[in-house]
Amino acid sequence: MTQMMNMPRVQTCTVAACGYNHDGCTAFAITIGSLQTAECDTFIGSGEKGGMGVATAQVGACKRADCTYNENLECRAPAITVGASADKADCLTYSRT
Image (cartoon, rainbow, N blue to C red; front, side, top):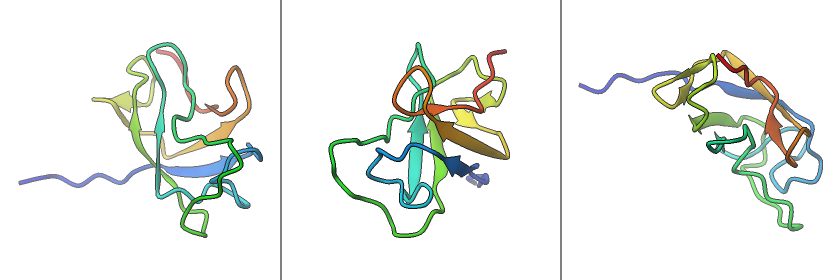
């Protein structure tokens, strides 16, 4: 039997240059991280417009195994904030263990 988990909400995204940001993140789900950074891998800044039309994005996966909220490469934070930082769009909720 597969156990379902609630995916954390993208509570806030302040990256206006992202094609998914229309008064909040409108992607269905986002992926966070690489081995070195907590960037939003779903970010697209090429002038493309995407999304579902409503800001209900969730975190689908997180590659930052060293984050306090990461369990088996899944985010367990109640919600996250995405904003400008070292990359164009980073998970500002990331907290190194």
